[in-house]
Image (cartoon, rainbow over all chains, first blue to last red; front, side):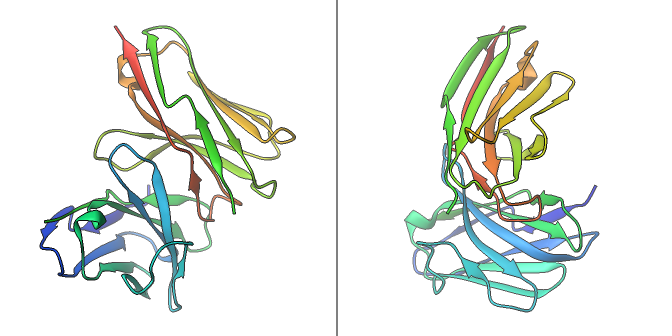
Length: 115
Length: 112
């Protein structure tokens, strides 16, 4: 099956710094990727939809200037958490849709801890 | 936008018994209803899905039912086994290639 990877798998950063998380489709081209956030013992909350070559569409309540999403190629989308704070500590998961396909594949997630 | 509610939040069943998780959704335009199993610290895994033109779907010990009129759908796991212990999420979407809105999750524990 299709493989989606995320890098890093975990990261610890200091409050006020920025962190970039990568989501890659390893063996297929993905025109659309989604970014989710999951706090401990909670559900996955959709943050934004990322389309290759265009601006991301953010869900209501998600600050687009804080969570910068770039989808510069058909195999890579990045999420940058700017000026991170402890409340941004969470599990960030991406998913990708095969171009022209109907299945959505999830990445393994990135655990962010802001100290 | 779509809102998905899921019950119960926790469920404990004896090994070998059945488990049922129920969900409701709000957007009548939703047509795709996947169910995911998530183990601690891992990605959600699609275990079964159902589309709006089907009322029921079964895959071995797992079955899903959908009532579009009532906007209800349910997951049924029969002959539960210890490895079924995990968090289960229902979800709704316009299609399998659209954004997915997740329910709040059910923590299923199987008692030996």
